[in-house]
Length: 359
Image 1 (cartoon, rainbow, N blue to C red):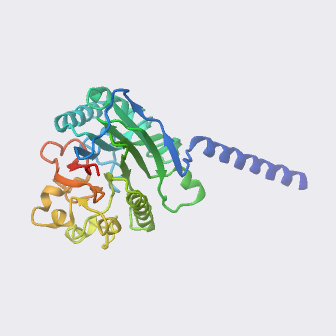
Image 2: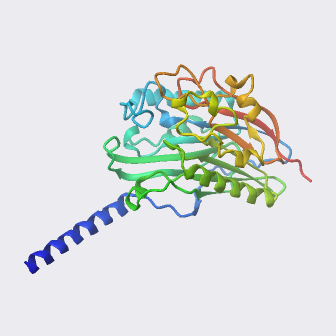
Image 3: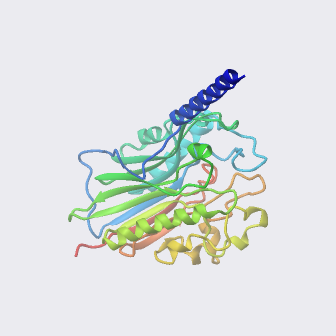
């Protein structure tokens, strides 16, 4: 009996060891701060102090389009992946809108790379092939990556990226890990790992502009993760500001502006807090859209999110923003809505700034 028990325990320990080794090998553990490779043409020009800079931020929803209700959108969502035809259409549409707007810097969220649900496409590469003449420089960072996720609705690989494209030279870039949601040790290995993608664009006078790209946690219910992530973003911006480095940040923050929480039906409020965690940023730094724009009489023009919900017939909330250093001056801004409603569940936010003049 003692020998049988010993063999049983050894067998269990062996199984646990194999499982741990498998989980370790299949998942991704990024460092707190990592330098990233930058692709940039040798002749890409630096920025010039005082020049205008047009910026777009857009969550392109892995090029899925708007014909689906995915399992992660609603409890009754049945869809697991878009068709190749729909992704090809969305790819062409994203390229069309970017080419039409011709922003100097493009901040993209939810581009897939190696994910089973999007047929293992490298969507950034596909997009860059269509925009190579506009953007000689670019960099990217994963915010979700695993060779295998055991969730039955995924049951395969995931790979989701932030990407920044630039008409101007990018000297270097880095990925900064944000706090992640609380979970047990095993679940934590498979969950998204939201991050900041920071690109540094040199100025002709020797200075630099920091351009940050992010996609914050999308929680089913309010928890401490959003507050922790916004706190981390705030500290990163404070550090740049105190160093005298002009900066801007754009992305999908998954948080509401002042006044929109009460405008949502009760069943749509569950992911959000009545007191938006985003106030930690708007209390200190200018935001696009402003709270007055996003909740005022013309608020419909500033809605950026059109959830994959059959009960909705258009955008109903704002969760995508640009924040910027007070050293920059806003010239104009808009959410491009008219011809983008069928491309993604998010709409592009576009703004033009003036960079600080040389001292």
